Amino acid sequence: MEVAITKAKARFSELVRAAQNGERVVITNYGEPAAELVRCKPCKRKGGFDFKKWEETRRQQSTCSRRRRRVRPS
Image (cartoon, rainbow, N blue to C red; front, top):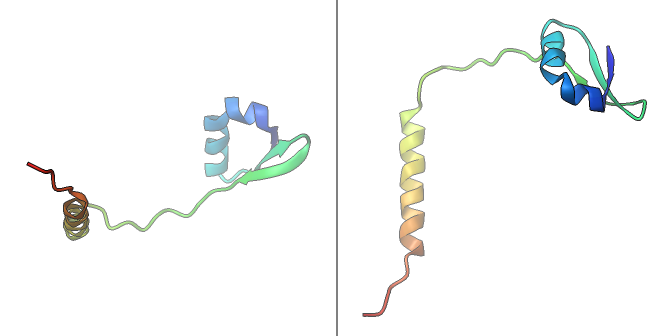
């Protein structure tokens, strides 16, 4: 299916569903193919929350904020 970019903006959800169903969706700009919507592979996600990564990020941000503090004169 080929769709002009202006019409693709208005029908984006419908076009994504078509791509999910395996249909080839080509978005054209002035009649020339500009992009193609294709079905992607499902993510292999573990699921859940990564507490170790969160704690590491929190610690890095807190050390950065301590370095940026200015000493105010009394």
